Image (cartoon, rainbow, N blue to C red; front, side, top):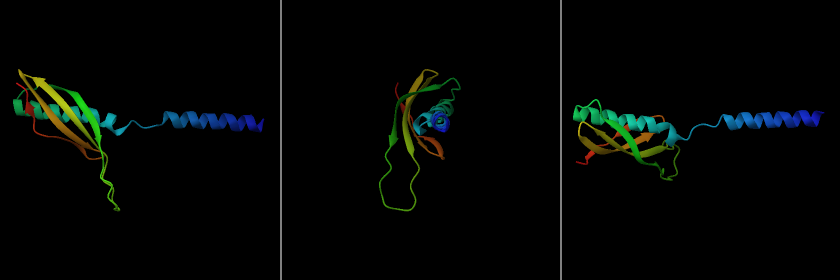
Length: 109
């Protein structure tokens, strides 16, 4: 009986631990990246209707330098934004715990 109780306890803990896994950073930051590019285009074009979508995304490799401080994980997104008869692509960098920054748009007209 004790073996069965231990087995059930182990399975229960395993199921709980599997359910608590966090979302990968690149997935969690994606809505913020889209929002950053979209807001920048809306401002630059004076176009509140501009909307964005992800064209590509990847994690940026942190340099392996021996030091005490490790830089945060970063993700790079290419976001396409369209609206008000304009289109552009924005390079957006998001740092874990630091928000996202949208670089200058490259107009595709």
